[in-house]
Image (cartoon, rainbow, N blue to C red; front, side):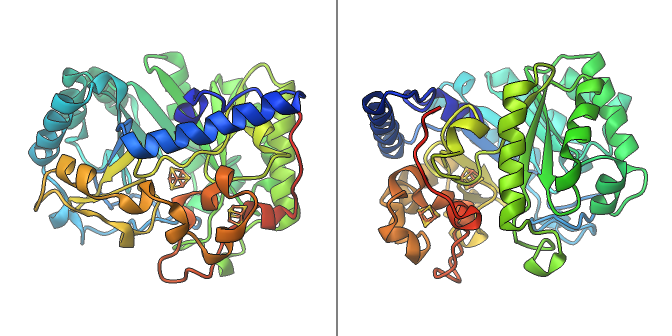
Length: 382
Ligand code: SF4
Ligand code: SF4
């Protein structure tokens, strides 16, 4: 998703010339409108399973350690049919097919679907906790043409194992990272780190560890209040800690040459930070360029949004029928779905509520406003 925002003309490289900056931002806003109208699919997620081999303290998903959802999981052929139809409409070389979970490596047929997708021309990738990514499994996904991989690692040993509630997890993941570094066959490879109260003060030695391993990029994402990571978990960052994270990422991006440090696109942090913490402005492509097929066949925008925003099910209608006829809430004025307070906000055109995953259909009064959290606004002259 970060790549997508980076590609948006006008989204990058704001300079001190106010007029040029305004022109760039206007082009950025126009491009968002064009994408909403044309909705060219660029990322298709497949939530292959809700099963997971861990029960992380910060997990915001619906994943489960038991097998109770296994019967609802889609068979490979059901996904392949949709991939074939989509490839007839769009150029699959412009679409990333991302297999997620739960933990996708819990299923042994993701390679079958991934290889099928690669055969049609898609690039396919996984997001994994890497606990099952031993040498044999790595060889298996490589043989199936895996082209992108994001590995979750949430700090150094004490923090990661505590957050994952699994002693030894850090070493397993570090071993998997070393294998990926030793055999750099993927087109893109990064580590995703969830930042919470547990690791906020130890980000620098963590980045040093990754750089020593040879990991090319780390993407930080602040813990989000959902699921097990509720407000009572003690993991949520304070306003000062959010600012600490933003400052750390901005400074690391300036000073480090051995590893790329970036902030996920999830959320808008205002003009003081947007130009400094990523390559591009915040952009939420959910439902305009991003769609997901859920474990039970449900079709939704980004997999992080509330399941109440499900558009239909591929058991009842083809994905493309739903993609064409549904998704209005993402493509029309998002104010109709965004938290109420966003409607009159001066930052609306750039922020649009900070991302659809922040919208709570059961509580439209709630807002997870980045600017509010850090108590800032201003003008970016980077
Ligand atoms: S109030 Fe809403 S639109 Fe304004 S900055 Fe906050 S999240 Fe974004
Ligand atoms: S819903 Fe959130 S995580 Fe998904 S694309 Fe939008 S901003 Fe990113």
